[in-house]
Every structure is written in structure tokens, then in C-alpha cells.
Length: 206
Image (tube, rainbow, N blue to C red; front, side, top):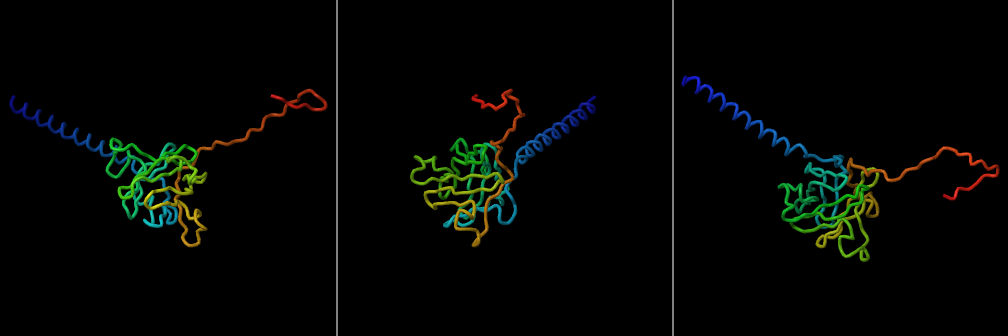
């Protein structure tokens, strides 16, 4: 009787350990499942530029993802990570300390703030400040997933997402390109032909 009890306890212990291992495996899978990027890996299609900090790599961290409502993850630079969303930093969510993000209106127009531990806040839209009278800027993504225009930081100045922001791309052909594209908000509808019953024609007023 004692042997049967010991065998039963041993088998039960084995299944408990197996269950715990399965739970850990599932949780680790859930943590890494969302990791990845939709930024282009092409050599000239994942770089931003600042005259002081130099190149900003949107692809190398494998974390930057453009979505309909915001940009997730973080880019790397000579000053460390540039974080676009408090919920998806290198150390996980820090939204309890500061709730920030770079937002996307779904049409590719960006606004809000990114963060860097060395230089602080990076603004993607002039309206984040008191308004756009002093400098009218806004970073945006076009219908091909290409970033344009600038972001602003009070310490290092302009951060460019595309070489066309300057005089051209002859000196350095760079840009940031994502697989995300804006939803179309424009369209055209041709209706059927209607006979209004008037030989000379008629004009619709409503």
C-alpha cells in the first residue's frame, strides 16, 4: 500500500513539474510573439539623420512597428535608444512613469513625443508646443510607406527622416520606409445614367 502511494505521489509530482514548464514556455512565447519590425531592411531605407547625433537606425533593434494608431518600439542612435512608445521600450512598459507615444492618425500624419534618456523629448508635430506659428513642421508617412519631414528636439535640433528634406539625395541617399501604408480616404463613384424625361436636358438641384 505504501509503494502504491509513493508511486502515485511521484507521478503527480512529475505532472506538476511538466505543467509548470508548459506555463513558463507559453508565457515566454507570449512575450516574444509581438517582437519584430515592419521597417524596411534595405540598406538605404531605415535611417534618420541629425547633424549632431548622426545616424538613427530604425531597423537594427527589430522593434519599430508602425501601426494605425501609433509607432511602437525604439530606434538606436549614438545617444542610445529613441523610444516611440512608453509601452514598448527595451526594458518593457514604463507608462506608469511617463505616458508618452508617437501617434498616427491612420492617414500617416504623426504627432506626439518620442523620448531619449540623453536629450529628452522629441516632438513629431509643431502643435505639440504652443502652436505652429514659429515653425510649421510635422513628420508624416505617404501612401508608399515612406517617411517625410522632420521631428524636433530642443537640444540637437532637427531630426530628418528623408534625404529629400535637404537639397537632395546626391550626398547621402537615406530615408525611413515602412510596410505600413495609410488607409485610403479618397474615392470616386460614377453613378448609372438617369433619364430625367426632359428633351432639352435638366439640371439637378439636390
